Image (tube, rainbow, N blue to C red; front, side, top):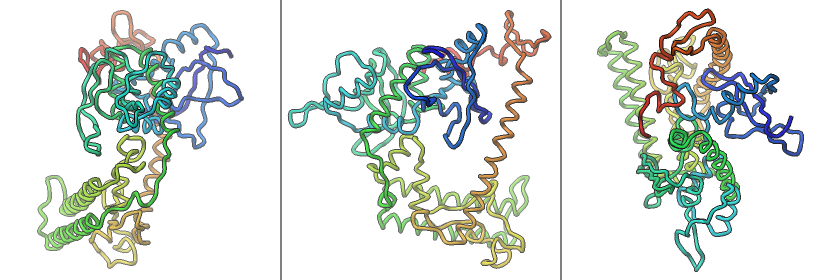
Length: 451
């Protein structure tokens, strides 16, 4: 095996991931086979004991197919829905988020980052000076990766008055003028900037940008210390009292609905029984409580904490997770419904028979940071076990479904007259997909559009 040879990795993933991609070999010291973290998402690789198969194409036809069809740079846009499936993840994404938010860099830092991304042109002019020393804004460094004639505007996140807020992300003449780079722009599964580059500059420019993005994001991450403490989850007493009031109001509304049901005053919705309508109403009431709490927590979360920045960047966490820890966990849903009555007309022996109250049916009124009681822990475990079983059973089912689909469709091809035919030359479709659009080269399944 030599530098530049093509190898093919294969992993049996869930149905909506790619299972096979071609990579070019780069010989490095050591005996460990290494893989770029950027491609973890399309492979669905999570390093928990995953195994992959390595294929070495033997014939000229196999090598040609690997080089033209399977090669990694041709898999940036997925044919499933026409958006990027390869982009910045986790540390890379978080590093680029910090860089473009409010980071200023010294000349030494800028030089280090320029070397990381193989930037061999003149450095941009500094944004400002402090104490006689020049400082560059992170957006200027990020702009070094972009084509010089890139121009477009999209709604996203901006840094304003010391807070992240909604606004326009502006690219002008290859410069990021305003805005923060997050999952929406450079992440997988829909990165707007990656999609823009792919459509207007081609696959080579896009793949070079993603490689440099990888190096830049990791270089920034190495300069920043990520840490978290319980202090990050603390909220002021005023907001704690607001959350207590939300819980009190929710309990009162739930009791009113329960009384209506017990007094036979619930009017059934079309196609539903009275009980189904009652459960739907009470679920809606309890869900609103968690949404309201999320809004309260989001107003006072600390913008300088790693947890919040990770959620804002889309690098793994969500603001909802912070709300569940600082506020309360809310209603535990089992297959879309409240936890149902158990063996003897009650979920646990701690409740009266046929108790319909929120607490008796899986409502958790505490946050994870403050601790939940044994009854709430039991309801939380029910939902957790259901999710675990669902994951364990869904993965082999979807994998087997994919295998059957591949076997059923493997002999279909687009013929010279534009029709789709099988091995017996029987016409399956008169036009590929019914509209002759290659989704991987379209804008979300449409053509003749400008991003």
